[in-house]
Length: 447
Image (tube, rainbow, N blue to C red; front, top):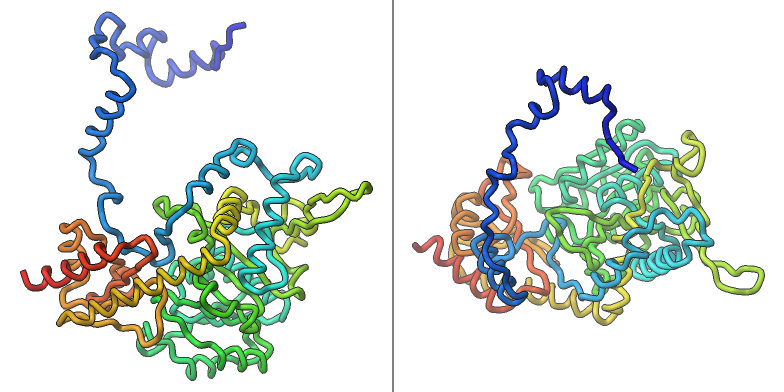
């Protein structure tokens, strides 16, 4: 049967609104078939077609043509091809929320494996079925701490990603939770003693980034001890790759661990989507946002998977829900699961070691160039702050002409500075690329 998307009455309404008498007049600006030139080139073989399209594509200059040292929260790590192959399968790619366990065992098992891996990675007792991204996961962790302690203040150092601070204000202020920002005298140098003085019995939680936004790996043992004395929950904001080199948040005695999961097999994709990781001690089980998948046995003794905790507003009364998070980023969580499975603990450690060693190599070489200075006072991972002899905007423009995206201009976050950039190095950078950056840093100030 014929299907018309518009009724005759609707068509008349459109004509009246546009000022035309009939449909023919409405489309009069479109040429009729006899005016269209159909003289197309002859058909090509598949190989010839690919060559032709490649030659056309090479006229464009995209980010892939640059050597990128961009980071600041989204990182260019190697992603094994198996990640894309698995996540592109239709049963995963098109799957929605696993409300009915009898037809969602594959999805539920993937979530369960994901949770188990995050617990192993962070040394925590429980993990949920993921959240939107690192920023929203951090805000949710603060809500968990406030719900547990009954206090209404969160102490936030200014060495976390600046966009995260904006999200904290957006999510917490409507809940009457005070976001107290701690600023050191020098913005990139974390003052532990001053920070400890801000801890008191009114603070519900303190956020401890490792590494911080500037790449610093800081020893928080004093803060952890002081927080424990004052009954303050400690929230570790970590990079999942670095945990294969350092003690886990659980080993350090943290209460909640939060991260952006993008480094675990998820491409940058112009800034999204991300993956929010949150894990915690057992006592926070009934305060965790979102959902938690569990493993059980049926009457026949077969292993089965179900959603054991569902505290989001879609599942329970809105006023009793712990969060309005309505997605667990299932596809991104699957990508992280496949990535961790493919890499294994030794592979993750190898990636972290390469990131660390290559970053240290680049720092050593840059220190040899007169006019440049590394500003970090702590060991670093993946990234570091570089003081440059020119205005940072001008420096980045000059380096871009040499096909280098050298880093992030820190004046975007702090208007009081104009000659500092944040440089990021991952395992994908070759020694030739690192040496080319060092050579180019010399040339842009000498020429």
